[in-house]
Image 1 (cartoon, rainbow, N blue to C red):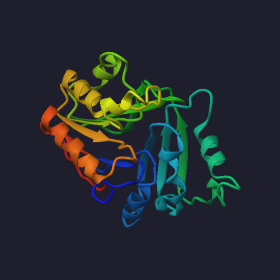
Image 2 (cartoon, rainbow, N blue to C red):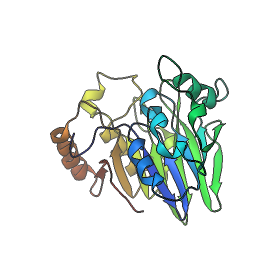
Image 3 (tube, one colour):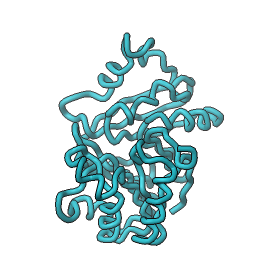
Length: 253
């Protein structure tokens, strides 16, 4: 996993001078080190859901320990049954973790919302949301700023036949779509109901939604670099200009 990476989900989206973060998997440790070298400011962290692989990096995110930083942490998969703050507190509790979230020195606000709501993250920065098909539910995001759009869609499972029409409409004409393509169509036959999709389903969805750039994301940890090279070749043939995500990759819409 040298070329594609092996950490779990973490993205940064920059809209002008506003920083938006998406998911807090183990990869957020590296992002935290980069942000810690910059002056403290306000930022938003949007979680697709609170399964452990998407939140395990939170206790190791350096800016959470730095006074002056201000974060709004959002989750749309828990409302109204659970509270995000309680979920994080329960994750950081002995004997699972040695210190509670009160160790954080940043100003952190935990916010729950029903998937489907629009969120104005800052002036001119709109984050649209939608419900995804995943165990314990998950939330997809569409960021719109300065006439451009990026969609972050993970973790989700496609329908048995055709596309998820609601999701197709949500992605319509997006500049970049980052999509859960954990499996191939062949592998998926043994993983129905697991809450993940395939790169081929992503191609079909992005074609139908007239997406400009399709990004294959959320790689199965059993897929090594050589396997992912093969996926990259197949995706390029199926939808030229598509991209297979790698750690540290930077894209501009």
